[in-house]
Length: 108
Length: 114
Image 1 (cartoon, rainbow over the protein chains, first blue to last red):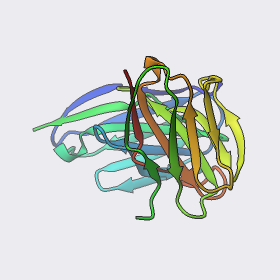
Image 2 (image 1 turned 90 degrees about the horizontal axis):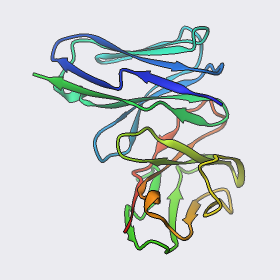
Image 3 (image 1 turned 30 degrees about the horizontal axis):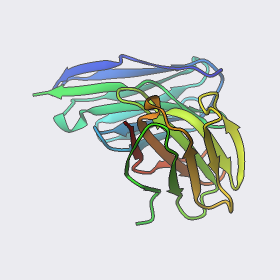
Image 4 (image 1 turned 120 degrees about the vertical axis):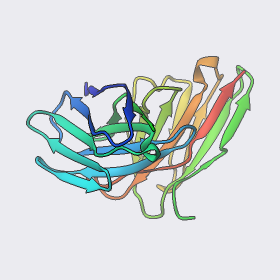
């Protein structure tokens, strides 16, 4: 059965710092999504990664996919408070399976 | 609003009662997913449909749970004889075409079983 593991599960950052969230998965897949969730809200799509080596950037967030290593990363550059949220990766086979999420807090 | 719509947004029910939730996907999206999310956890896959066909069901979906998508448009998720452990956010998502395409989530139905 497909397992999706994210780390860290909790991340507290200072504004202006950089950090990377990791998403490992157990079964071959070349499709991976990243979502953001604010408290009490639903999930907002951030990135869709569809092939090995895919890299996408939006503002201070950059996501990449290495299908051979079964690894995706979400890199945060010069964090700001507005990025505080929970970030999920989801691996796609026939359906989508989610990691446990990384709860990010950006402190001034 | 042309996004994924879920109804109701909140439901409080007594243990043992039946509840039904509705999801209206984005128009022309033929894939529809149901997930359950508890506090501090990631969404857990329950089931998904391709048009009206239910293609996969999680082991989490006990025989008290049933989902339908009768005409390949909206979907319903029914929970019979609710238990306190059913308390969660129930999320619906839809996508177009195969698994390659982006999935959009509704706002969810928050169920509280008392």
